[in-house]
Length: 281
Ligand SMILES: [Fe+2]
Image 1 (cartoon, rainbow, N blue to C red):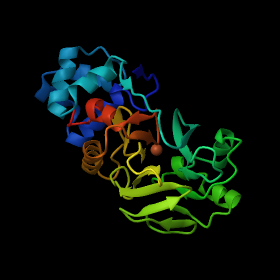
Image 2 (image 1 turned 180 degrees about the horizontal axis):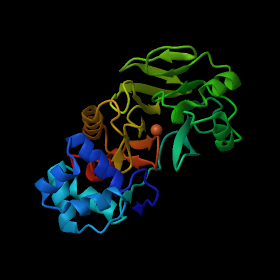
Image 3 (image 1 turned 60 degrees about the horizontal axis):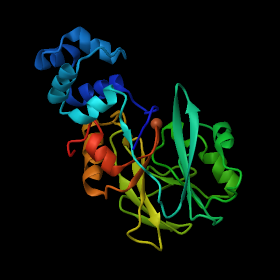
């Protein structure tokens, strides 16, 4: 098992999101945990002098996964094995602000047909990240309509002659709205649409496998619902983000590879066991 140095969120981000989800401010958390308020402020400012005992006290009050929180704090959050997929998955990692946003291309290995999931912030970034041997896109799926994930939508429609990008509602020019539970078959892949709102009002994850190999390892494109080691910001509804992430951690096979909108690949089993927001470890 490897240890990933480039997670989307570090301890300060996780604490900030957990406090918002719990509706607690710094002084509330200090009073309930017995951890001095300045120690909490330090963590929120990315200064990590906090002791293991204090960290466990914060985890207990915030309902966080103690093992995962310690792994994150000690820079040893595990990155699991994600190989052995029955189709090709290409990661298009593009710089965005101080971070990185991911788009993905999925295809049957050796086939020309392919599916694009999200498209980064802008056509120029997508162009730079584009694999030279991919010349055809049969469907462009979108997890959510935030600009950092959809800036290349119009460009790919034009370049590949697509009638629309497919994603959550509402339908608009250049978009076709999909429905929760809908199943598509494109480019030899079977794609199940999962509605997972909370980061924004309309957000989808996509569970993708080979159409001709039911039961083989699948990939969950999780957008900004959850990442390796954290969850997306609950800008629409924090409780909904946690409810949907925990539901998927519980219900999907552990071997399912997770391809998030930011940060490295992971697996359902890894996040079930270590994600600081997991209550099923
Ligand atoms: Fe994002």
